[in-house]
Length: 386
Image 1: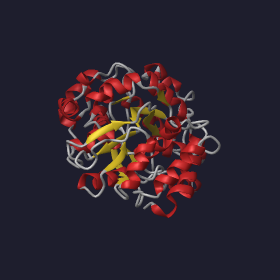
Image 2 (image 1 turned 180 degrees about the vertical axis):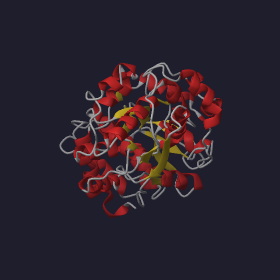
Image 3 (image 1 turned 120 degrees about the vertical axis):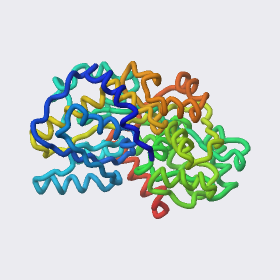
Image 4 (image 1 turned 90 degrees about the horizontal axis):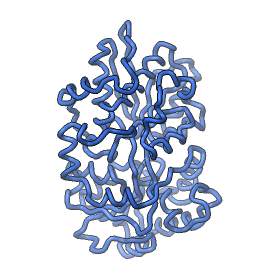
């Protein structure tokens, strides 16, 4: 979704290289690192990854994208065959959870602690909480206090809903005009799903099977006025921007970035539910089991590089995962000027207050998230997602 600008940031990268993790190790011969993106983080990280070649000219990269539900089966087949052609996976809690459940990832901490000195203490407090979900099998690389938020066309929605009950009433009065993505494939979709237990006063927001009675009942009611559930947030935003839908659930980055890119009109508005709790989001770096020792060492070195301040500053991007950096002491003044300009023009004045004043919660852990996805697919979305 972004336009890359490696050249514009080369000076920044050179100035800050090595501040946290020290100089990268030398690579003796040409190596290709195959990177797969399943959560959209490539938009934030490709410039930073490519800049690794400035000090490692023998390293080449390939980049591909894959739907999160398809990758675990592919990795499992590769590992069973004794070969792994995927070296680094970029993704969110969905692919992280699936990989942990199926034992696909290489353990990072504490096994590789020497490679990542002080990594936990360098994280922002909320990003460090998100790192706990990785169960030492991945590293958080970008952070966003996500949502749940509502994004809408102000010409069609005069008064934004302030409670889930008001949203349901609006949806029933305007059938098929509200949309959200299948939670297993959509960050805003799963943030909305995980935020509802806090809004509805459910028994246990961290137990989707036994503690979400009100949430599941609500989602089934909401389902009656939703035409279908797209298999990705990009499709949701296109429909919103084209005018075939009037309102959707959103998160900070998916509000800012599509408007900056012109997918959604700039004047579309954002709203928060009364008394909402932020459900935070993170993208992680994961490396599959089965890599050669030499390739594994290279990938770990790259991961350490991506957590340096200069590379973290690039993750402000065009607001795609707002704000972006997962580590401390990376103000937006370190970001490329283009990023600073986008945030100034398309950011929201409301965000600073909401982030500071509303409580924050981690998303579900890996096992609970998989159970929630399964229950939503079977009992809510059923045959209505595509």
